[in-house]
Amino acid sequence: MPTDSRRLTGPDETKSPYIFVKQPKVQVLTEKRHDGRSPDTLRPIFLKADVVSQARGSAYVEQDNTKVMCAVYGPREVGRREDFSMKGIINCVFKYATFSCRYRRSYQQDSEEKDLSVQLLDALEPAVCMHKFPKAQVDIYVTVLQNDGSALAAAITCASVALANAGIEMYDLVVGCSVRIAHHLVLLDPTENEEYKSQDDNPVNHGSVTIGYMPSLNQVSAITSKGEIEFEAIKKAMNRCVSSSQTLYSVLQKCLNTSVVKKLHKKTNNYMQT
Image 1 (tube, rainbow, N blue to C red):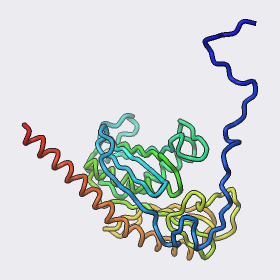
Image 2 (cartoon, one colour):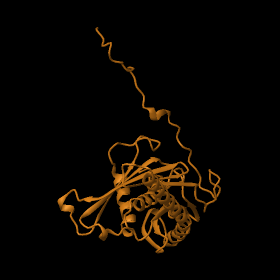
Image 3 (cartoon, one colour):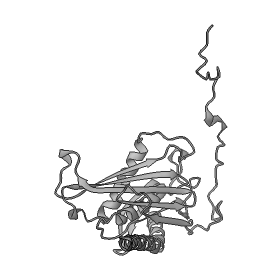
Image 4 (cartoon, helix red, strand yellow):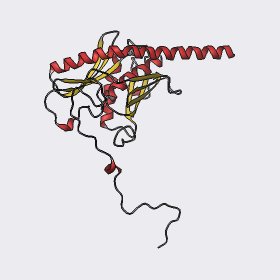
């Protein structure tokens, strides 16, 4: 039988690559965490603004192995006539990169990513002066490059810095923070292995809480939770998130200050050359 010499024929039998993926061990949550942190300690954070040259504003945040990038475009004309409004419109798109998780993600947005996009929008809207750009919209694109837990909290922080870097007027920056609740134990900034998973069918007071917090105004812009958690446990988790967000606020301010100084030096050098 003639064969096509220009085509590389595959094997007769194939196996899914996920067969060879090492399954993570079921971790018992204790005060001694696998990365050596105490329950109320944040992971090391790296934050940089103005990383995407084509965007009006952008930012990149890295919390250990969780890496998120955000690009902001606009304000520009509203694309659809039915979306026209005298106030400005914010459009948020949250997306996991195909290689960001243990299992390959789809190129198209799935239901989880659409839900996270709505939660991100809810956290950012109260902080933006939307009346400053009437009849226009601002597009925010968040891409998770690597996911090791607390991706939504990192996305909120990253998008807030990107908006400020784009020159969008805001009442305050929004700092994202999340905690994992397991009975009496509250773990700040959980990793992927520590995050709450609904399929585990956990009992009462097992879940997670994520907030968006505006430190200067001392206001919570948004809160989302998973699992069945009692009110006192949520209150304790929120207090832990608020205190940690106030600690991170200085990091955001320093990042934006560095970005402004670099832009000023660049303009000065271009002016001197001309």
